[in-house]
Image (cartoon, rainbow, N blue to C red; front, side):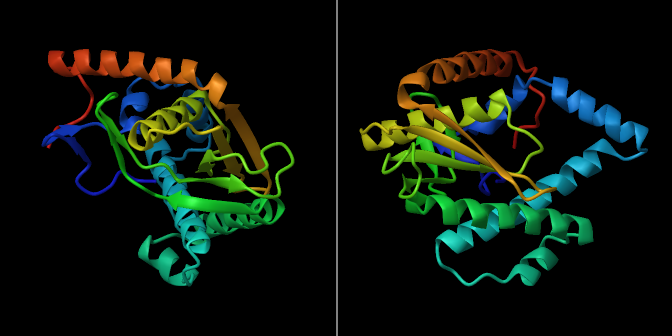
Length: 230
């Protein structure tokens, strides 16, 4: 999902979002291969990335509306996001995969799209959801962080991102989650895949983010971050 309007702030000072920090140290191997493939097809990589992101945003909003039991106005949403026919198909297919996953796992959502600001990690983030899966054999009734993806594949960046959300949630609530689950809804074939990380195995990923955050601060002080401050 896009960053909230206005970004995040701590004690009146602007701080980066989790994905902004991770993005500065992103493993670009897969992205470069994708760019190369698009180049061979004579497509603009930046434009195609935005198209995929917009379709993903649409799917996320459909999921959020469904879980919140709000009426879904799919055509109105697609028109507002200016999605073309292919993008609409991507969103429809990903959303169908979500509906299949939802039916098979029966999630009971406890919170969704709540903004968090961490004084410890000095960053902000908005996890997709926290809840329990009431029809999942392995994760039955565990309280877990849930994150939806519509990308072509899962990456280590996703794991670090959601692990950091777990740390932020626990800092805010003073409780421990049982772990987190990333679910990727494929926009081409309508399948889904899951990646679960138990709370015991989450700590190393949080440690990686701490290292990223420290380096990010140092780069910021040196004035060599690749973003424009507002």
